[in-house]
Length: 322
Ligand SMILES: CC(C)(COP(=O)(O)OP(=O)(O)OC[C@H]1O[C@@H](n2cnc3c(N)ncnc32)[C@H](O)[C@@H]1OP(=O)(O)O)[C@@H](O)C(=O)NCCC(=O)NCCS
Image (cartoon, rainbow, N blue to C red; front, side):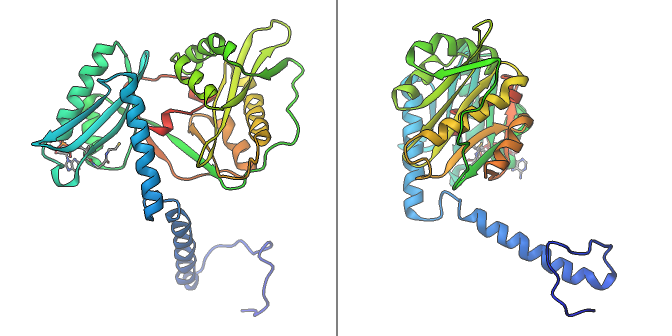
């Protein structure tokens, strides 16, 4: 064997001999361990500051859900102590279940079943017809979801980037015109959401705009018809791209390029890391996001009772907060 150090960009690619197997296994382990270390840093419970931030986010989200409908957060109480919770966000005709948890000392005794029975009543009474959720890997959760009538679909992809590259110029398309979104666009946005997202979210979009989200609405030049919109938000902890909504697959890439451009125009865009959450059904977004420096943090199990939303031309915003 030669002792020359080979340029790693021009390795020989060849079948392994029996003698190579142990060294190959070491390479596997070194790379897998480094990857695990890299992702462990993103575990939201690694230190007390991160735990406190995660708890505050959960408190805010639960409070927001309850404020929109006081039946939407359900708890299980034993004597005076809360031992479980679940919550649902309803945007007609879509119900998205969130926060399905039973305290570890009370699990596997039927509390989770009772929580889901109650949330099913809330969903049925609301008139929502499609239920979805993002699940953990806990087989107890999967068991409950299957019995509820929810089945796994293509996963959610949480894409993250510490220092993404945003396009320096606004994308051009001779058939399309874009302009900044204002609160006057809420009717148009509700219409686009009904068509692509499968639900009207006028209130949430209005709230995000009031809180400082910025974005663009895109129209066909000739007909003037709105064909999509893109919002971005610089939050206290991260920047977020989404929702990005396109009525056609043909124009989705333009909308995403526009969203990335707008993200680069917020003050100090590289002050914080950025998130983009999408369905694995959105094949068009993945390459663009990889090129911009994003990578998928993990795969999140998505369960649904029926399809809702054209996820192949859509980037999430609020579903991933639940
Ligand atoms: C998921 C969770 C909320 C369910 O609550 P729970 O009170 O433990 O659930 P239940 O006791 O009502 O039901 C558990 C079911 O799992 C089954 N189960 C238990 N261990 C299992 C295993 N290893 N594999 C498959 N099924 C299992 C039980 O038999 C029971 O099903 P059954 O009632 O049809 O017999 C709770 O376990 C939990 O908090 N898990 C950790 C957090 C989590 O993953 N939450 C889901 C986030 S999406």
